[in-house]
Length: 257
Ligand SMILES: Cc1cc2nc3c(=O)[nH]c(=O)nc-3n(C[C@H](O)[C@H](O)[C@H](O)COP(=O)(O)OP(=O)(O)OC[C@H]3O[C@@H](n4cnc5c(N)ncnc54)[C@H](O)[C@@H]3O)c2cc1C
View 1 (tube, rainbow, N blue to C red):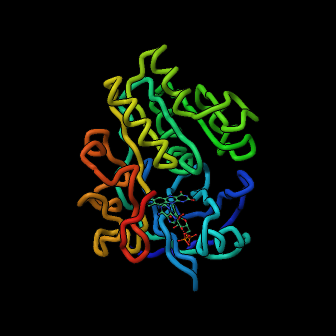
View 2 (view 1 turned 45 degrees about the vertical axis):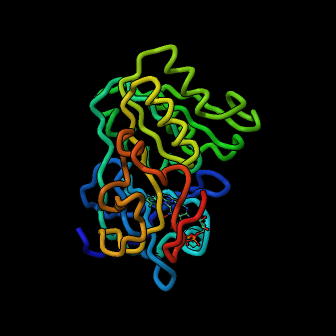
């Protein structure tokens, strides 16, 4: 739907030093992995993954003007929500391995809730630079078989989350892999999945203006992340030259990641 709904922020939770979740009552139906264009009056409109646990919520990492404005919001403030847009994660396989880092959990958390309803086993590899930056650690611990990796070794295994994922794949049968997080991490996950012949789905982030396939800002090798994605299969990603190498700036120029 391309209607703009105005919603009031009912609750705010700090997840990590740079990530907050904003809760509101929107009520539209959506699938795991879909996103909404979030309007911050007077500032900008930006894509955010949408999830629901009691209230609807978005989970926002502070990066620039729009996300800083979202971090400054208080309960009672209003934002605009347009969507839901994009495709969704397929959750048929069992067990599902999730590999996530940075703010990727914002896109994957709804898939965790849905997979739980379908009685799927989820193994989750969660990575961050430091312990305090691990997103949704407690929520994931309650709902998944959680393995943790940090770059500095402050929690879980010291090293990359992809090393943890490889170890799991080598030790047990995994039906499919879902990944969301820094693109360099997702590129590695897709390579591992290809080598091990496991279906993989990755959710991409590109700069977006319209969210509905008109402006073409989010193009990657001829596909539009807003309309053809944001979730792409391993096979689609293998055909993309720009995946893991280039993104587009606000004015449309290719820039190395
Ligand atoms: C489908 C989709 C879902 C998303 N879901 C979430 C989410 O759930 N939570 C969340 O925190 N963020 C999410 N994002 C990213 C979020 O939209 C951007 O962080 C936000 O638009 C940045 O706006 P800004 O004005 O704060 O920063 P800007 O001033 O626009 O950018 C600051 C810096 O952040 C980086 N950046 C900005 N936009 C992007 C982007 N789209 N991809 C990669 N790097 C970017 C660039 O390095 C840029 O220099 C999602 C993006 C997409 C495409």
